[in-house]
Length: 311
Image 1: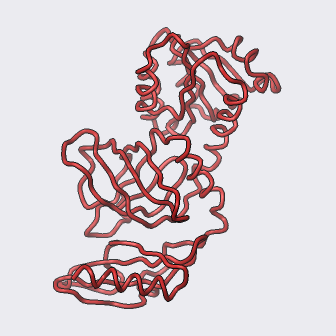
Image 2: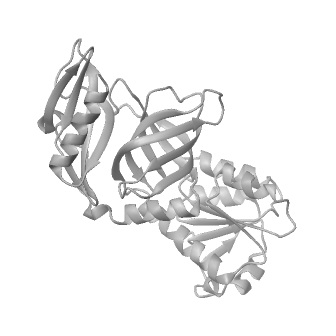
Image 3: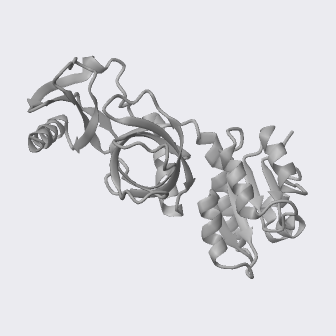
């Protein structure tokens, strides 16, 4: 059986002496001789964390990380990079852009490393937990000069999110993202990559599934806290879209649907959908915006005010 932690490109014997937590279970850490051996073991499943160093005989460190993130059977494994003090400082950014969850410099602080190991071992267990989060996402494609775009989030996990985008992203797969969590105070930043087109997102938006390549520690902690409470949050996605329409408003060439308020941890959310007047049918409009309020009445009033400003 594959152990929960695999290591490559570093001296794991010295590592277990530096960090006593790795000695508590004799099968907790297994060292692989090369990057290819590591990826082969990962593809067979079982490991939840990879610890990488730069002493790899067959592939450069950033390339190993990119390959792990590129394969469907390995992309959800947590990657922790341990760099010697003498390595160039720019390597820290290179490995995070390549897809590492975190990078630490040696000599290691045992308490800090133990904290990261515990956190990253827990992440894959929650990868399937998706919290419905509806709100505005600011995205900046890294491979084009088109500037920012404003989309809508549909759901969120510790490893990615589903968004509705007003622009095509297939040719600009890597994105800098910024969005607000439902608690109203946590603004999250992440580097994401488009991994699929999501047909479940309705016109006039384009849907994309995004995988997080790097999330800063404070943003990761905020997402982790939200996902951990997923059981206490009500689902925002309706069972039947037409059944939850509270009001329908017409402004110029658009029809706006205001849905019933949905309770979440900090109050109430109201989703606003929009579709063209020509050919409009109830429940077929696409996502447009989400407002919130401390009560259902306040949230509905905010939704009507928002729609009135679009006229």
